[in-house]
Image 1 (cartoon, rainbow, N blue to C red):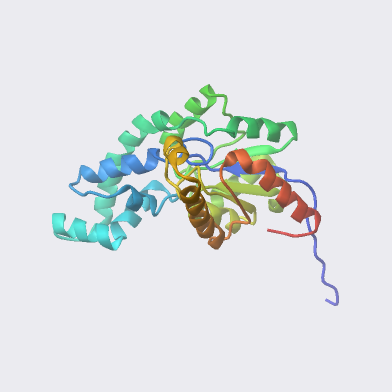
Image 2: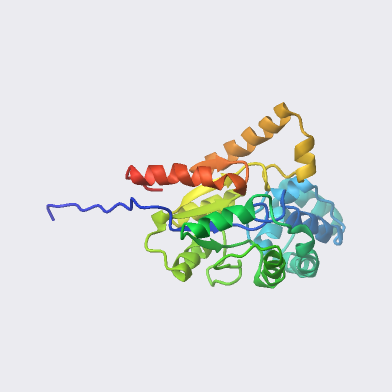
Length: 277
C-alpha cells in the first residue's frame, strides 16, 4: 500500500493499575521479605533482608527459585544440603512459606499514607482502579478484606496465579485489568509499582509506568526508619532507587503513591503532545 496510518491516543488517563505491597500497603514491603527469611530459616539457611528483596515483584514460587539461584545463597544451600536447590526443594520451601504468608500478610499491610486520598481523587475523575500482585490468590483473599477494612478499595485485583501464563514480568495481569475494567486503549493506562518486574510488566503491556522510590522494596525501610534518616542519606536512597527503576524503563519516578497526582499530570501532558508509552 502507498499509505501508512498511525493512530495516537491523546486523551486523559483512563485507568491506573496498582501493585500492592510497597505501593498501596505495607510501607517498605516487609510482608513478603520477612516471611521468606523465616521460611528459608526453617531449612537451615540464613538469608538477609537485602537478599530476600533482590527478586521482589516475581510470583512467590519464582521468587524462591531466584533466591536459590543467587550464588551466595546457592553456596549456603550446597553446604547445608550437599547440592544445589532443586525444583522439589522450591516446592517444599513454597509449601512452608505459604501458611506463614497467609497468616501474617494482614499484620504488615496497613495502607501507605496518601493511598486513600489518591484513590478517592482518581474515582472523582472517573479513572478506573485496577491492581495486581506477586501474591497468589490465597494470600490476596486475606489481604483484600484487610485493605477494605481501612477504606482501601479497588475495582479489580489480579493475583499472580489467577492466569494460565503466570505473572510478572509478563504483561498478563496488567492486561487482565484492562479487559475487566473496559479500558479502550492500553496507552490510557498507568502501572504503578515499587519493583523492577512490576515496571517491566507495565511496559510489556504497553502502559505508562510510575516507579516508587521510597515507599517500597528499593528503599526497604519502615516509615520510622525513613523518617530518622538525615536529608543527605534520604536523598541518596531516593536517587539509588530512582536509577534502578528508570533503568528498568519507568517513565516517571516519585517517592510514594501520595505523589501519583503529579506523575499523572506529567503523563497526561505527554499524551496531549501525542506521545505514547
